[in-house]
Amino acid sequence: MAETVLNMFFYGTLKRGHANHNRLCRVYLRAEEATVRGRLYDLPFGYPALLVEQEDVRAVGTSDHMSDAERGSPRLAGMRVLDGPRVSGELFAFGDPEERLPALDLLEGFDPGGGSSFYRRVLIPAETSGGATVLAWAYAIEKPSGIYLPDGRWPPRA
Image 1 (cartoon, one colour):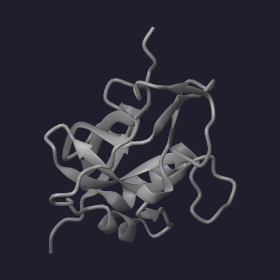
Image 2 (image 1 turned 90 degrees about the vertical axis):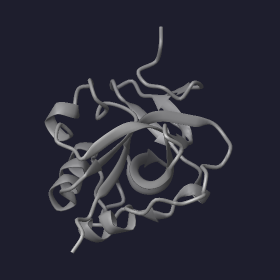
Image 3 (image 1 turned 60 degrees about the vertical axis):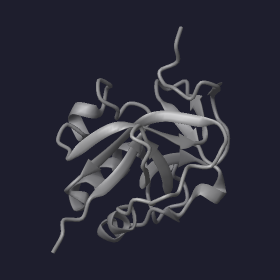
């Protein structure tokens, strides 16, 4: 049976070289630059927040981490990310979804059964630097918050 690959799109402290990367993302199958359609906000807490269009959300995260990982694995041949503002980040592929997703959900404060989470884990299309479109999980907010970053990059450039 093929290994289930967990695709995650990171745009903040989980990217390589940032505060939470070594703790939670040091071991991965592959990583590459990618973009998603959305808006990025700089929060006063030292990390960013992603706002995505509801029409881009293919699924919302659940407590069944293995099933969620399986939904996020396919490449979308011929499909492109829709036009609109872009957020830059990194697409990571992990081979350990049963351990990785609970740890990431905990860091991001995402409780799939609770209604009080700041972030939702959503499955959205991400376009890699090589031009492929992949479904990937990302942590997103439901309404604008913080300072809008029009260039879609975090940390903000001085």
